Each structure stands twice: as structure tokens, then as C-alpha cells.
Length: 264
Image 1 (tube, rainbow, N blue to C red):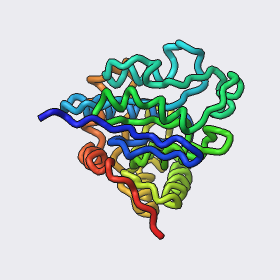
Image 2: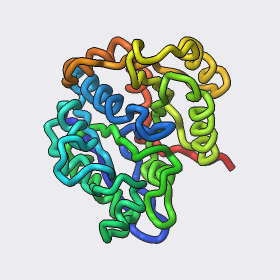
Image 3: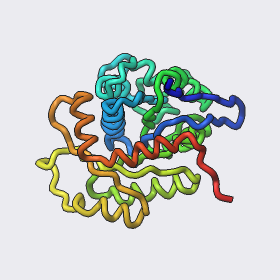
Image 4: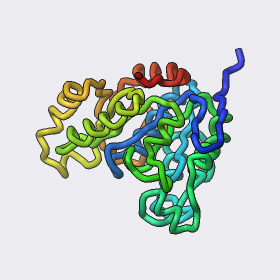
């Protein structure tokens, strides 16, 4: 049986919406919490299972054009998709600012229309997409819209990446609250170790996941370890398979083609 490809039917106009795609939007509670590593690891794990998963970074900022230190280059290297960084992140800006300001500094006015259109090639190439956001869900994208508006337009469920240490409960619960105000489905939370055990003495890491699950009424799908070795798709796929509840993520992907409904 021929595999069914994603359909990207975009409506252009004042009210921008996208037909729901099979995918998962990976957001963070803040910048620097490890969204790129988690996105690549899950993608690599899915691909190791024979799923045609791709990665898409609608917009990135903070790295010189062509830099191998950009999120797009890391996603390309670590996910194993074979897609070029320029396809993964079609909108890239050098200034270390929120996407709206970084684009404006480069003389570009971003719109949701442009961002959605940038995902067409990848949507046609892969069966599912792991979409990495920029910063958190309240990061400004355009003159009027935030990252959460892009999530709502895509119609995908969300995976929240949060740091494992002190302060993560507050940031995660606030992110959950804002997503639920928009009636956006949340697949779960992944805690990420951003520094080694030797660098941090933080007893809250033992209980943060339990408290997030209790107060946030959300599944915590695991804690991803800090990896000091060179990252490869095989290594990341193995860690994701061992440390994360991939069955929940696969289930979210299988349901992601059905648009979320707003409660009246």
C-alpha cells in the first residue's frame, strides 16, 4: 500500500489557517531548554522504526547564515533525515533576537502565510513532521502573532520541553495554561537535562516531574539525559527509545490529522 503523504492545504488571507498536518509541534518553556536535541532524538527514533519523519524549524534566529552552529544544521545532522538545513529552516536570521525583531533587522516582514508556505516541501516529502518552535509559545513571530498562533494555525498537538531543574514547575504550568486557553492539545512534557550531574546539585530534579504531572494534569513522558559524547542519529534514537514514552508520541501523531475543537 502506498504511504499517504501529508496534505498542506493553506488558506491565505487575513485569517490564516492550515489544514491539520500529521505532526507534533515541539515547544519549550524558554529558549535554551533543549528543543533541538529532543526534536532530533524523537525524529531519529521514529525513523529507526521505519516512519518517514521529518524536522521543520519554521524560523530561526541567532546564528550567521550558513553557520554549522544553527539549529537547522543540528537538526539536519542529528535527526538523520538527509534534508538540507535551508529546507529545514527556510527563514533564518542572524540577529540573536526574537524572530519578529531578527527578521525586521534583516529588512523582512514575516507573516504566518510565509511561514506556513515554507513548510510545504517538507510536508510533501515526509509522512509526519516534528516542528520545532522558536523560544517559548509567547515569543513574537510577526507584528501581530506569537508562536502560539502558528501552533493554532497548524492544528498539531504540542510536546513541551522543559528543563529538569529548579523553576521548571512554574514555567511548565504557565505554558500549559496558555495552550489550554486556546484549546490546543498537549501530548505531554519531556524534561531535559541541560547540564551534567557534576555541574548541578539540585534535589528538585527528583520530584519536578511528579509535581508537573499532578498540578498540570499532563503526562510527563520522561527525562532526557545530558549527553557528553558527540551526538549522532543512532545515539539520540537509542536514548529516546530508552528514556521517553514514544508510544504516547506515536499515538499523538496518529491523531494529529484530526483538527482540535474549541469548546464553546
